[in-house]
Amino acid sequence: MDPSNGVQIPQRLVELLHSAPSIAVLTGAGISAESGVPTFRQKQIGQSQNGLWSRYDPEELATPQAFRRNPELVWRWYTWRRELISGVAPNAGHQALVEMEQHFPQFTLITQNVDGLHQQAGSRRVIELHGNIQRNKCFAENRVVGSWSETGEIPPRCPVCGGMLRPDVVWFGEPLPQDALESAWKAASTCQVFFSIGTSGIVEPAASLPYIALHTGAVVVEINPNPTPLTAQATYVLPGPAGSVLPVLLAALSRA
Ligand code: OAD
Image 1 (tube, rainbow, N blue to C red):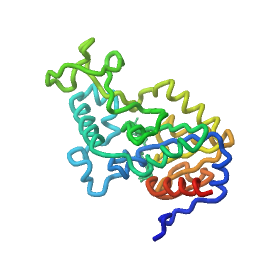
Image 2 (cartoon, rainbow, N blue to C red):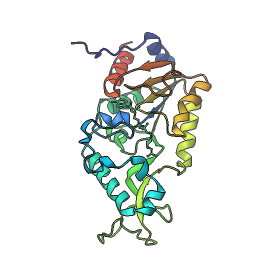
Image 3 (cartoon, rainbow, N blue to C red):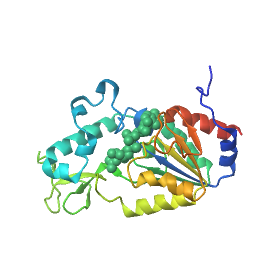
Image 4 (cartoon, protein in one colour):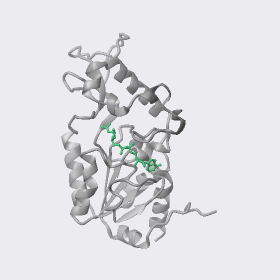
C-alpha cells in the first residue's frame, strides 16, 4: 500500500520548509470536515449531518439581525452545533499541525473555526479569528459570561444586566477581535511560508491573509480538495483532504 495516499509533496517545498524559521497557517472549516463537522458552504451529501437544520442557511442565522429577529432560533441552532462539536474528535490534520508547531521556531496557527478542535488536539498557540462556540457573552454589553442560573428561558439571561446571552463568535457584519486580527496580520506579513488549509477563502478579512503573505514575498501553500479563488495564485497547491495531505507533508519533513 502507498503510505502517501498518492499525495505528492514537491521536494523544493520540503527544502524551503527546512530553512524557513517562520510559518503561518490559516485554517477553515475544511480541516474539521473529516472530524464530522459540516463546512459552511458545501452542501452535505444527503444532508444527514444537518438533519432538521438543513433548511437553514448558516449565513442567515449567524448575524446580529437574525438574533434580534428570533433569538430562540439562533440559540437553538448554536446548541445543536455545540452538541455536534462536543461529540467529535480532532483528526489527523489537526494532529499533524500539533507536530508542525513543535517543528518550527516560529509557528502561528490562525483559525476561522470556532470548534476548539486545534486546542483539543494539543496546539498550544491558536489565534481564533471568529471566537469560540463554547464561550458565551452578553448581547447587550459584549462581556464574556461563564455561568448563569438556568430558568428555562431561551436564550438564557446575563447574570449582571439581564440581557440576552449569545455565543462568543463573530457574526456576519461584526468586527473581528482586534488583538487576534493584529496578531494574524503580523504573522502573515512576516512568515516565509503561509499555509491556507480547508478554507474557501471568501470571507474577509481572513481571506486577505494569504495575499498579504504573497505580497511580502512568502511562499503560499494551499491544501484543499477543491479549487478556491486563491488556487491560481498559490505557489504550491496540494489538492486533497487535510487529514491525508498534512500527515504526508509532516512525514516528508521528518524524513529529509
Ligand atoms: P467554507 O465552508 O466556506 O469552506 C470550506 C472549505 O474546506 C472548502 O473550500 C472545501 O473545499 C474545503 N474542504 C472540505 N473538506 C476538506 C478537507 N477534508 N480538507 C481540506 N479542505 C476541505 O468554510 P470557511 O472557509 O472556513 O464565519 O468559511 C469561512 C467563514 O465563513 C467561517 O469561519 C464562518 C463562515 O460563515 C463566521 O461564522 C463569521
